Image 1 (cartoon, rainbow, N blue to C red):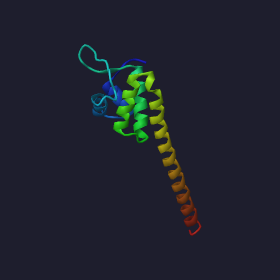
Image 2: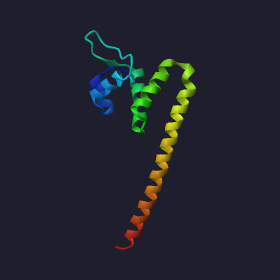
Image 3: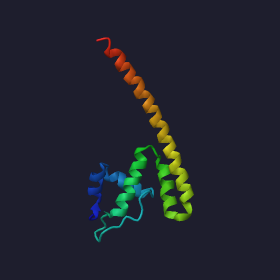
Image 4: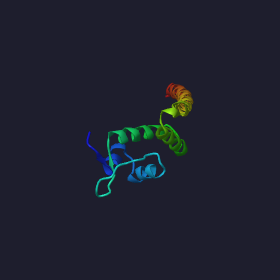
Length: 119
């Protein structure tokens, strides 16, 4: 895959350029190379990292937790157990949310079925 510009990345992931710049400013994205004109360009590694960050963000991970996760990744192999703990906690949160959504869907389906018999 070719290197992408910030506009191409923002289009690809349906996020704003400002979001990308913010993630860079707070340290979630780091070491984004720039061309001779000072424009950011995104290689496959950065795009894959951003995709992971956006997945975590969409699942409810806070900016603070993302910053911590990014710092742990930069610190290297010695932080793997801390990363596992952070990701495991998020997985548990998501599982709880999923369970609640499943319960809500069951109740809605029951009500729809109940009302369907009345018409």
